[in-house]
Amino acid sequence: MKEITVYNSLTRKKEILKPINSPDLNIYTCGPTVYDHSHIGHARASITWDFIVRFLRSLNYKVIWTRNITDIDDKIINKANELNLHPDKVARIYAHSFHEDMHALNVDWPDFEPTATQHIPNMISFIEGLIKNSSAYQIESDVYFSVSSFKNYGQLKGQPISELEKGFGRIEVNIKKKHPLDFALWKGVKDSNDHGFESPWGKGRPGWHLECSAMNYAIYKTNLDIHGGGDDLIFPHHENEIAQSESFTKSKFANYWLHNGMILVNGKKMAKSEGNFITIKDALQNTTGNALRFFMLNSHYRMPVNYTEEGITAAKNGIDRITEALSDYTTNSINPPNEENEYTKEFKSAMSDDFNSPQALAILFKLTDNIHKENEEKIKLKLQATLYNLCCVLGFDLSLNPKTNTGSSTKLISKIIDKLMIWRKECKLKKDFISGDKIRDILNETNIEIKDLPENTYKWRIKS
RNA sequence: GGCGGCUUAGCCAAGUGGUAAGGCCGAGGUCUGCAAAACCUCUAUACGGCGGUUCAAAUCCGCCAGCCGCCUCCA
Image: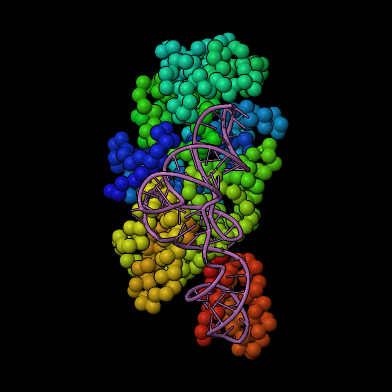
């Protein structure tokens, strides 16, 4: 198995990936809080973890991927009050929306998708354990984690508690807490009518950081190989996860911390307060999941990415050229075995260096060029099989290709196009090029590209 | 204030010591009834600035400038 190096935020350097129990590989990534439609930042994160998992699986690692959904927190409750709905319903509505988006982006289902509300009892016993070993304390109906009890607090951020405290000059500190950096494990409700769950400390709800620790413990029972998330979560979220989990289990929480870069809009981090918030559904109005994925993959996952119309158009045109090289490729034909060749070797080598997807894409373009230049049908088919497989590893959706999609809707489209093309052929034979071209143009407007081939034959495909 | 990151052609973007991947846009050409796609050529003598180390620096070190992120909910 090829050695993979990953940049570990914990040590701030690239390290060789050594799973605890190879080829098993446990990975947990932070999912969304479902209080609104997901935005393109969630798309970036999801696509990142998706292609990383796909790549690891292509190397025969037995990956178990968990991605949580935060379905209870203040923002969800506020939204519920606003819409006069139960918080659970708000969460379900937007979790469903998130799943629609993931489907549109061809992001694979994680193996586990726990929600906070499913894990309330686990979180309560987790807190009890932390109180028992003096890592947490109760004040009224709240429970806080005591950062002073954890000697490595600040390791992920790279600053000791004494330095971290200095950032607190300008924000309001909850005076109930023993230390400004202490964070809530359990937040008691202010009013008994408020939404909450029963606990030994009264009615309340879990603190956000807790769920990831408790779920990991519940699902894996063992330490994680990889923990991923957006780089905005490094502090305090992931710092706090480490503190809780390691205080509870007395062993290392995760060996490798991977963080994806932020999506910028107009050069600024995307945020509602900046007024530059773009949902995945908005983005998909003007482009396809493949184009969005290409756009993301064209930058290294750790780098920030500036979202622009130009960038999306460039991505659309780029992925279109790659998939075009597969427009006459059919997976039903007798495919050459998925054997190693110079392209797959280069691809693996690029991807094994901290998942260098931009370099991997360059190899897909090299394949694309060579497919077009290849005259020998047998060799061409091999190249296409390689390209097809590598596209799948990166998670591109090739079902738009009429030759590789045997779905009923594609068959129907195919029939309609065949009928229109008979009509077009008649027009052309009568030298009525205006009518004939009109048919082609109309199809083009729906992203169906028609290519005329010799002797009144044709080829079609759906463009990005 | 503390910590981290970024600055490569018109645009996007790889590249951590050996002489700069790839994509997109634009222009011209081949092909075509016209297109589309593909191919060829050009755009491309591109590494923020100034010093230093070295036979050799986009890559290492120092200083400076600009931009961004985290320190508060955030993918």
